[in-house]
Length: 136
Image (cartoon, rainbow, N blue to C red; front, side):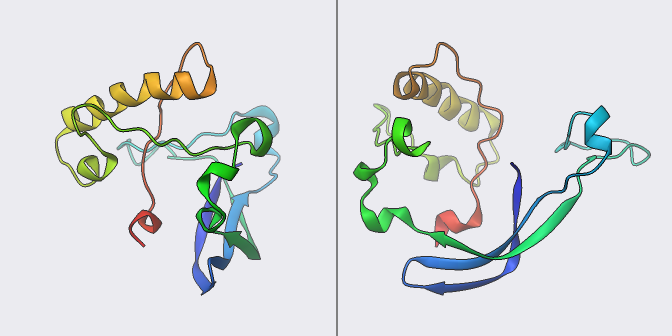
């Protein structure tokens, strides 16, 4: 599921009422794999074959209000990781950096943490971007 947030939000006590755009069920996706390209491409080629449909009034709850320790990957499908890197590297230090080496260093440190947390044999980090909501 891919979702894009719609611009209208109403916040009330840790809950947002928001419109989200989900990938539409279009016939092209029967024969083509969905794709979205984030790098520059020749304008004659499409950057995506996805179409989106807006679904309104979806309630988003800030689960941090309930305590992050109450959510487990096995039970809820997600979990929170609290980890201090030895060299003091944090995501806040990486956000906004123009230096790709800093981002790469952070991701290299993060990969074994995620492997341990999930029990995975391999972790591939393909999208680490943080939404502007991180700063709210």
